[in-house]
Image 1 (cartoon, rainbow, N blue to C red):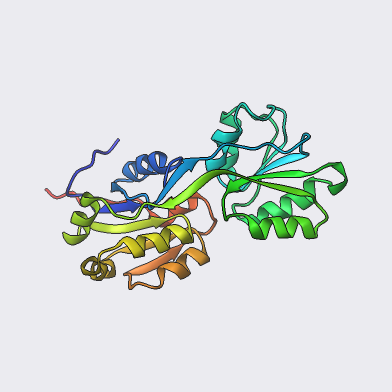
Image 2 (tube, one colour; image 1 turned 90 degrees about the horizontal axis):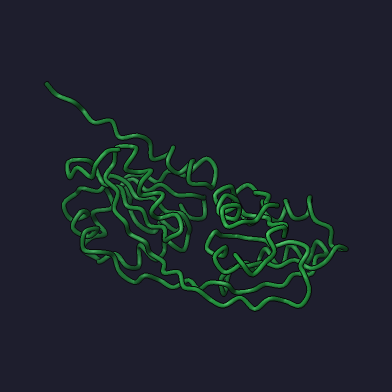
Length: 246
């Protein structure tokens, strides 16, 4: 595995755990020097279970799984927003897991295709202030939905000294952004004197909405992943090919 050679171009990884450590390792394996720059802090929130067994649990993020593990039966049907969240649900012990295409809209389509409003309510496990559009779409499709806050999301508020130093030294080649909120928080936390450095950085966005949030700053370029998942993000980043002399 490549080491964090200071001569390798740097890549900022702005997502929180779960997923941060995994992405840092993947970026390093592609030959880049990764910098951890999580822009959101995730906190636990106790799960208040609704009365009665739901027909299925819907997950818009892998952040929700820790609150559900051990609280819901392992045979509970789980509909996950994408493959990464589905994999984490299986690793947590859930056996009946289906993955949508990586967006809330795809999760809504999956629920409408696989579930029946007559078979009971749905449990949407999410963070406070999230999932409103999904709930609205499900209810319009005839489903009863119990939305439960199972984790909190707060801005990290600042960038680490190593990240700011790397930007100041022109050592950052690219930055990965996994949500529009992460993009907004990154730009808000960036000191004014560091903003000009972004003109030499290529941003890689997971979606068009994330790219739109990034457009508030001047980048060397903004690339959008072909699909809203980590694999497509890393494909957009690409492999660093070191020039060997001699």
